[in-house]
Length: 313
Ligand SMILES: NC(=O)c1ccc[n+]([C@@H]2O[C@H](COP(=O)([O-])OP(=O)(O)OC[C@H]3O[C@@H](n4cnc5c(N)ncnc54)[C@H](OP(=O)(O)O)[C@@H]3O)[C@@H](O)[C@H]2O)c1
Image (cartoon, rainbow, N blue to C red; front, side, top):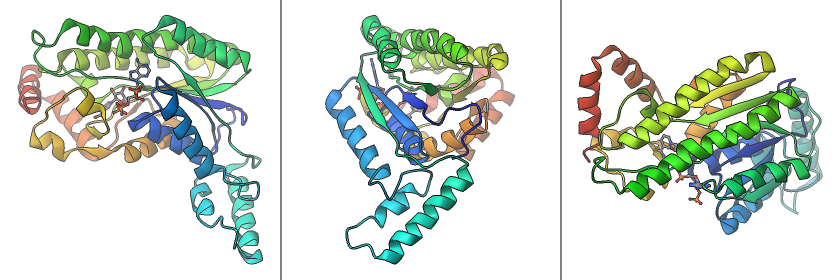
């Protein structure tokens, strides 16, 4: 991990929606890279499971300290039968790794908070928890999101309003809390999770696409506003990704769209790398990047026709 000077080595990475999909994979990548993690989700059982998994994978014991991308490899050789030579090798790797990353080796810490982002009190509790525990949040990943599928007039209003509540309202409330917090602390990185859907209107998923356009627009504005505050805002725009998202939203996609699906692990690794470089818009996958470029050169109504067809299922 190339920990940026502006980042505190004791700092936490707060990830919303960390119990599954992209958020879960991001928590693994950040833990693997040596960051302390604060997981947020609605389901305590799932959060405990993720916490234990992260500690088990990246914090196995005192000798095999979990720092950097080699942590997983080192964990593999962590058995009671390890020879003296093995131990020395591990130490060499650990020291080199720490040197390479220019930070002291230490165990990562993983904590979690149960919160339903639809609930204002829960959103406030996240900040209270951070404040009471004196956590330093270096990285905030605003990831939680849901989808809805169908023609606008057919999707129940409650479904679309819940989507707006999570993807727009809660997303904004979290920023309203953590942007002033980061301004006060004098540094930070924010990764807002939008989608390739942010770049166009999306017939048959109209409210979802519109919500992600909001995420992208707000993120880009904040990036500009916060430049002077040592806060870097990046926007992750994944294309179709293999998570529970599609099934939860009952999304049907054409076979072309299904062919473009990438793994959440790939999305998370790419996102981490690009976020640490301070990239503004992060689009994982060559196909997705190319499609956005092509769409931007096509007449808008033609793009809408193509998306409509793709979203027909
Ligand atoms: N998968 C894709 O194809 C795709 C493509 C582009 C962008 N994205 C975006 O990527 C983000 C993550 O999606 P994903 O694909 O990883 O989906 P996912 O596997 O369904 O994960 C979504 C996460 O958000 C959490 N969440 C949902 N509603 C919540 C609420 N009210 N309060 C707190 N947490 C809540 C979920 O927790 P529970 O387990 O409690 O539900 C879960 O941890 C979303 O913003 C999505 O729009 C996804």
